[in-house]
Length: 310
Ligand SMILES: NC(=O)c1ccc[n+]([C@@H]2O[C@H](COP(=O)([O-])OP(=O)(O)OC[C@H]3O[C@@H](n4cnc5c(N)ncnc54)[C@H](OP(=O)(O)O)[C@@H]3O)[C@@H](O)[C@H]2O)c1
Image 1 (cartoon, rainbow, N blue to C red):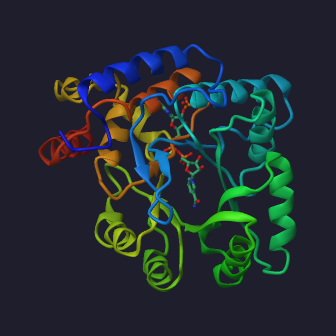
Image 2 (tube, helix red, strand yellow):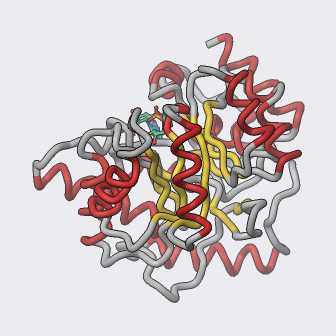
């Protein structure tokens, strides 16, 4: 088993009891005890980050339907109750930002929230207005993290974001890509810009980031957010047709989704993985993947071989 920030056995049992109690709450209230989840440090600050976050692309783009919005709020409630913090969205994701804002209001603005949004507009001069519209949609006083989405107009946007950070209007700055796009350029930007976070795709089948991006993030002291852990559900759907192999028990997995998450979290340079879901049971399951042991190198190789074969 890989080392993590877990504690002594007695401390672990105490925290498990706390987590069980917290799971019964609609969400984690300010001042509530921390449920036990694996955390990783944000290198720029040392702040602890629960290693499983929540994506919102497609799953939270539900428009104005009140029932669909409330269903997303329930997913968010279960997310916070299970010890989650980081929610990732973007102006590219249709109504998702407003739906996150609806959920935050329903949950009385959970203190644990780490708000991660993006700037996605070709014009540099129009970025501040887009950021302000996003902030209002979320209903937060300021974002914790803003990322340049898919490197669009990144030179101009980074200047804006770094200035906002210097003025105390933003805590962290980052960039994103996905599905292996523009990794060469991404790497060059990582090499020269003072980024706090980088976000890219990494999962059991898409492992190019192991070669250069993950080691560089460590070297440059950048936190790593991992998107598309399930290839947008393609992996979980495909694997659901197959029984869970015997090794799953060794690492406390009750589902393929948890095995896929644990595979990612076993990489020491990953800070937070952000699966998206429409389901309360799935969000609980995903957070629970950050609560039990992680696979060692040999088991990771078996998981990878099994997924590739199935
Ligand atoms: N360039 C970028 O910045 C960029 C690009 C891509 C993605 N992202 C971010 O990364 C997030 C995650 O990526 P993604 O949305 O592409 O897909 P993903 O997280 O890889 O997969 C989402 C799908 O997995 C299913 N799922 C979630 N938990 C499950 C579980 N426990 N068991 C079975 N199925 C489960 C969901 O279905 P159910 O609803 O049925 O659970 C959903 O359809 C995005 O939402 C977005 O925030 C960023």
